Image (cartoon, rainbow, N blue to C red; front, side):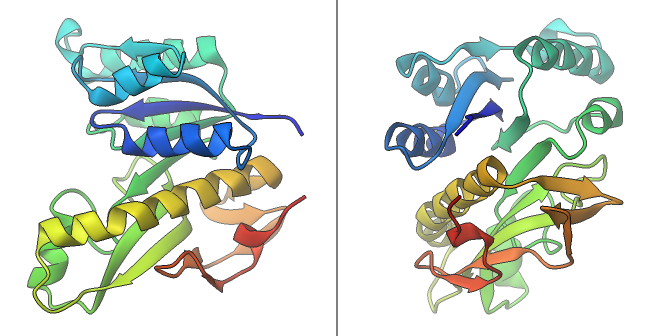
Length: 228
């Protein structure tokens, strides 16, 4: 089976990248991680990439006079690596519309909330303040509007008595990793497209995201467990 050529943008620890590498090396994912790009020189995720012999590139925002020129440099790098899919995995920088629109249907983001709730930052604290019963993570297509693209998949957890934002983040992380691997597997084994700003899989419209329970058990739709 051909490998899915994926480029990763990140700003931090790189735990999602490490999960991808493990899934690739175990044979779970037919994945070619062609490059990792960060806007932070000291991002630990860059070192994870280097240790796995993946090209690790730092693009310094301070070297560019404004957002558009930084985005143009990112676009040039992306063109050079020719990825089939671009993953934003904790990339703490908003991309401009020109770059995003150039890769519609090929750029996805992992966000720590049950979108459309709580776009942006401090998602756990906002869920607690609202008295929500559940929280989770979402994989969605990237569009010019922040965290507003069509949902691909979500992982759902219950908010428990005594929870804090830190506890919630720690409990979500392994489930978030399951969601990421399942989503990448979906892209590697099926045709996943953004058509008229809606999710289509193998030509079929999906109006709701695919869902995973806390233990990775599928609770809606069938694609995450399929093999081809």
